[in-house]
Image (cartoon, rainbow, N blue to C red):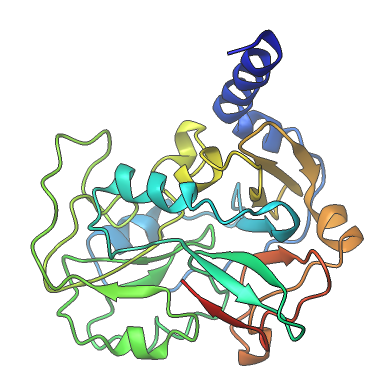
Length: 273
């Protein structure tokens, strides 16, 4: 590795380790958009008990399609870290075609909707949204009805039809913020690597994208960081680049912003994984 590449890699590691410090120093920020869904007990009750009137973070993502080359390293990193089967993609990368037939790529994680349709339809309240805006599944409660899968307009959920991959001892407890290993007979989905965020680590998809396509953002401090060390003011970044949200007409208020490369229409264009 050359000296320039080595320095770039070193800077990226430093930024990934200290992104929470950067977010904390980000300034005034946007108004809090979080809603705590008060359901269930166990882990959910613990989340509720920890909630305060002033939430430290409100998580969001920005995906800059101008730089995505479809390498799918984000998907591979996610599957490796969470010991998922090959067909279990918490973040999928679609090859899209615009109206003129030109190809581009679109990573699709969970949209972490502010009004997630998957939450109210669950008959056992296994789906819930944290006070920091992350939608999770409590697999200890899930009975596998798959109603939430049908409710999700983004096809961001899957069913655990088979036993999970064997996983070694994990750095976090097996809770909804880190559901490793998965539980057979339950629904699984992207969790934004929620257990890692308080430790100052970026989600796996963010830190492993070599093009810096995916940013983790905080609406509370108005800062976003990608895996190659770029830090931006979130509100200005999405405004100045005319960012859009996917299927916003469904009224789910997703917290993933997309920056388009050539004016594509994500809702109208066709795609394959």
